[in-house]
Length: 136
Image 1 (cartoon, rainbow, N blue to C red):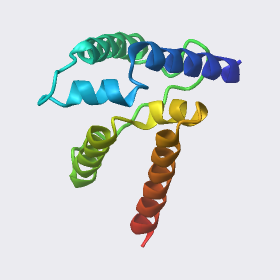
Image 2: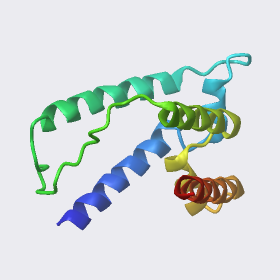
Image 3: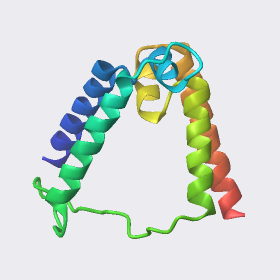
Image 4: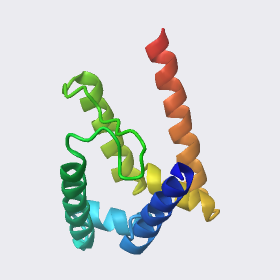
């Protein structure tokens, strides 16, 4: 049952990325680049996502298990530290330069688009480097 729920959630998330345009790097760069003809449409997508997130967190607040029976594992660390800020800066720089973030990169990879392959390989290399640096 959990596998089916996870698959359906991933399917809905992927469809949302495609429909909203977040899987299109040119559309994302059109939103992020204020020096060109700015495309504000992704702001509405983000506002909608924040609203859904607020409702979702309100529904599970205080619960130990989700509606499908899976345990709810929310982060317990609320500290804003150097690692969090550095990661946010790197994420923002990567998103701004490439117009791609991790979720849409998998869609591009699945569609056989070279940018997606390059991004996913770079993301995996970065994750590998971070684990090596942290363990030393």
